[in-house]
Amino acid sequence: MASETNVAVVLTTISTVEDAEKLARQLLEERLIACSTVIEAAGSHYWWGGKVTSETEAVLMIKTTRDAIERLKARILELHPYNVPEFIVLEASAVAEAYAAWIEESTKSREN
Image (tube, rainbow, N blue to C red; front, side, top):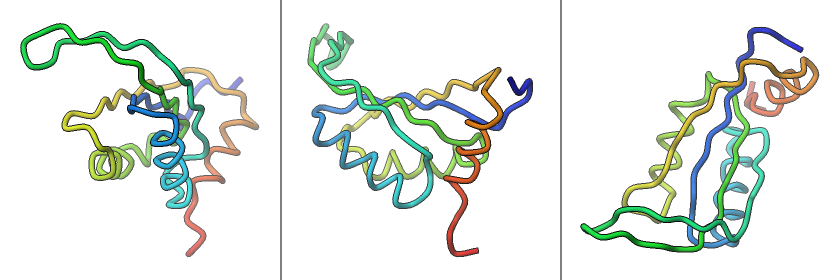
């Protein structure tokens, strides 16, 4: 396992699996992420408009590099249909070296 890594995991929720897949595809095509796992039918409970609200949402667990975080955040905030999208970054403390290398390679621009 690599002790220092450039890998980060980003979490966001979105209303439907279709919206999650569309967002993930766009981020992949822009090479901002290496991959995204879509978890469907997550129960979300939160405060909104002064009251407790419950919804079923899809969760995107996005794998990327720490270097891409600010660009990814800007893009998610631009593309996301929510007024206040979830954007939580989890820094990976230990990642298999081959997996970390794959994430780095997958997020490199093909224009260079």
